[in-house]
Image 1: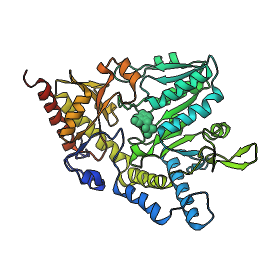
Image 2: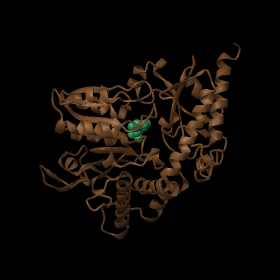
Image 3: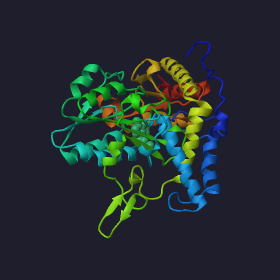
Image 4: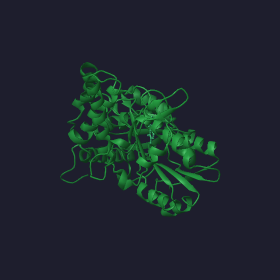
Length: 423
Ligand code: PMP
């Protein structure tokens, strides 16, 4: 990070690509873990779809509709390539990529359609205490419905999951292990490969929530050992309302659809229906075709125009700088590891004796956007004994710069002045 090749985070060649950031030069947007900003190429792509190829994909045999269908097929292949879902010949295997609305829907699909397949009374579903509610509540419900038990992996306070904990919790009763690759509060990456190996050794299946990893890290579902992998486009520079689920073909093939209706059938009689093959089987109704098309543009910008190498290097430098500067503030308590290299874009903290909602409101007056609250991970904050079950979270993307961090620090000093200035 500090060598001769270190990115210069005082310079920002990216901000100009993002209309919202370019038109608000005094804004420090530090909430990309909630949703990313979009570059103009993504906004243009969305518009281009409606202007040049608007037709309902799959419904028509005229060329406009065929073009829309082809555009979506291309993005499906792009997603497969992004996550390393390759066929036997090493080509992206788009067949097993399902478009959903977001990570939440993808994970619900697995819990609702795959859960009943493998879960029964006495079985166990293993999650970590760090899960976002999206990778928790669907499993709570799957357990309630099947009589299975939800079992938690607990890390140390810096987010480390020990081999002993993995070995103690994943056992012969385990049928499904569902984990986030990167925690949206601690920012740490979980040892998914190890967890998956332990799960597979017991014949269990592995579901990976990639919502916070796809924006920051290259993904290879084979190396991860994932049986299912879910993510949202909107955290990876794409539009809101588009998500993806990848799954192993034989599993998707065996599963029942979560939603039924148009587009997902092969044939229908008065009393019955035969499902279309994967992935159409899981894509009932008209999809956000423009959003999917623009997702392709977003992934191209992220992985080719910018590239994960640059993304990782800039984010690492920004996190390191931010944690160093936060460390200067003796009224700030960090959550998770003190090692910046373990934070993938996310830094959670609290200002001593000040409610996170007050911190965020005061920061907002200085144009600093951070997230405050339970971040949809209430059991984690409860387990960490975080006061008020709430924290502040600053999250960076490659399009941030050192000035954004400096604004955060100045504004946090103001927060402290407001609450303790007279002391
Ligand atoms: N998992 C994690 C780790 C997340 O951070 C989020 C978004 N905050 C989600 C799942 C849910 O994503 P979405 O709201 O796009 O469904």
